[in-house]
Structure formats: structure tokens, C-alpha cells
Image (cartoon, rainbow, N blue to C red):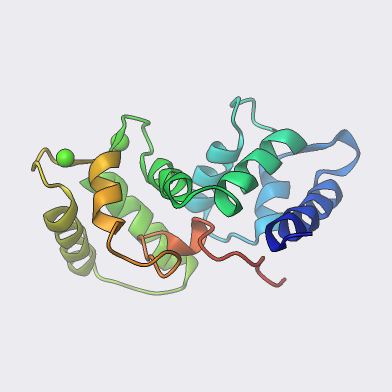
Length: 171
Ligand SMILES: [Ca+2]
Ligand SMILES: [Ca+2]
């Protein structure tokens, strides 16, 4: 069994436990399983896993999302991270979406930045990524911004929650 298949099998067993007898995972079960503390990050992750948007994650959705994170190409992983940030599904990340995700990640990691520091990080990211200065980082711009960074040392604003780490978090 490949490492990836092993990881998925392990998560599948965790899913069965967390989802219980109905085989569907509610948001609270999902949050408990992942150990995500921040409500905003939890909601964004849940929305990405809940493909059909019915408010429950079934086994198929869960495995499909995991495969996107673990097995798929670097491009798929970047796409997942991008979608996590693009809260309104507009196809671009604007400053407020990026700032919101940064604040959520800082809360999740119990770090404190001032509003000015966050603004500064947002501006730096936009200076590097928003190459056409549209005020919105498209997926093409997002991918280009990360292209020169070696895989899995990539640190998007939400790298910890985007599944870049392969192992599961110990409980
Ligand atoms: Ca957007
Ligand atoms: Ca742009």
C-alpha cells in the first residue's frame, strides 16, 4: 500500500467513526475530527468538502476531497487552497478575503498580529501576486506566485489548514 493509500485508509476509518451510524458527517463532527479550532477556517474547509452543499459530508465527498489534497497534483492542492480563500466564489481573492483568512489562521495558531501588520502582509502578498493590479488575485496569479517555492514548504496564508502537511494531526 502506498503511503498515500495508507493515509486515506486511516482517514476513512476515522470518518466512519466520526460520522456514526448515518454515514454522514455534520459540521460539528467534521470540526472534531480535524481538530480545527477556528470557526471561520472550519466553515471554509467544510464548504470545500461538502461538494453538493447539503450541509453533510458523505464518505464519497470526504475521500474525494482528501484525494485532491493528498494524491493529486500540486496544481490541485493549490486550487484547493485558492478556493478556501475565495469565500464568495468569485474566482479571485480580494484583500478582505485574504485578510480574513490570515486573521483566522493567526487565531487558529494562537498568534497575535496587529491590524497594521495584517494590512502589511496583505499588501506584500498583493504586490507580489496581483500582477495586473486588478485588486483581485486570480487563480493564474495565485499559482504563479507560488510557482518558485518548492512543494510542501509552500506557505500560503493558510498552509496549516490547506492540507499541505501529509500526516494527520495527532489528537
Ligand atoms: Ca472572491
Ligand atoms: Ca489580478
